[in-house]
Length: 183
Image (tube, rainbow, N blue to C red; front, side, top):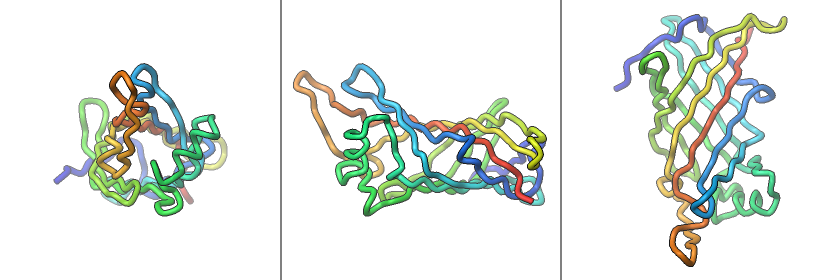
């Protein structure tokens, strides 16, 4: 059970994620010596703040919108070896609670990827609220988590001759989110 907590200065209502001012990114170890970074270009979501101040989050990512700035790799990631975007077109997150951790927060929730749902913890930094630029207030958040791709049924192994693998198991997911209060 997660203790409910209110985020300071985040008013009651629905805060829609603004994809043009937000990023859903990831990084993964490549060839055991570097990291490949990428992002998803098609995503949506909302932070809903209840009357008692308790926030909840829901989000959806279209996995076919992946880009690593390499078309051949992106097509392989969309294929059955990895995301199988045709069979599993979306990844989703639904929060189950928010709790304080020092000056920051943890958002607990259920993450579904490749047809598999697992609990995850997002480390969250709340960047505050700004009056916006004539369209109402906006709030900013940064969050991250590390998942194991094999926990979500993405189990392709591409071993290297000298040991190790082409692609690591641990995926760091990073979110930079701007959300606007809906009228």
